[in-house]
Amino acid sequence: MESSSPNPAIYWTLLIHEDWKMHVAATTEGLCYVGSHNKPFEEMADWINRRFPGRMLVQDDNKMEPYLNELIEYLQGERRSFSVPLDFRGTPFQVSVWNALGRIPYGQTLSYSDIAKDIRNPSSARAVGAAIGANPILITIPCHRVIGKNGALTGYRGGMDMKTKLLELERKGAW
Image (cartoon, rainbow, N blue to C red):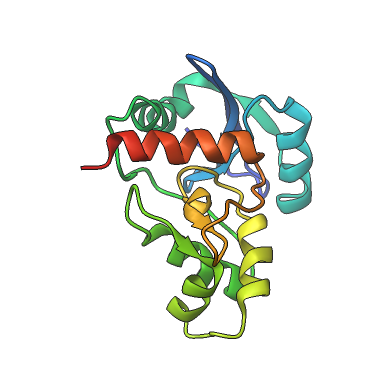
């Protein structure tokens, strides 16, 4: 039974799979956070406290199981898209960018300029970069698929090693 309090809990768990280790959190509406590889609990707790003030973090491995299952399937190369509900909150601009990221096909990359054109704001490449950097749901909202216009790998909230590993995983699994 869900709490009827005005500040319901945010559930979290730690995904550990092979050499991957990430904190993952969800509201009752859906997945709201996938953390950076090998970062401490505090990274997630700080983000939750800023975006969901007054919410209590509750570790609940059972509630988080559907999210972990899909993330693990992805990390094993068995899943190309996600079906779990997402609860991402941001400005209308950020949400438009995050939705555009979700349209990048598995195993492919686009540039910041490509995303700016996709959201019909072609002069917003820098703002697109800022919105991508604020993406709270790594992997599931595939910001790792965005690269520089010249094809170079660029910044990533999860770190360049994580971005490189995700792109390599998708290259191996691309049909």
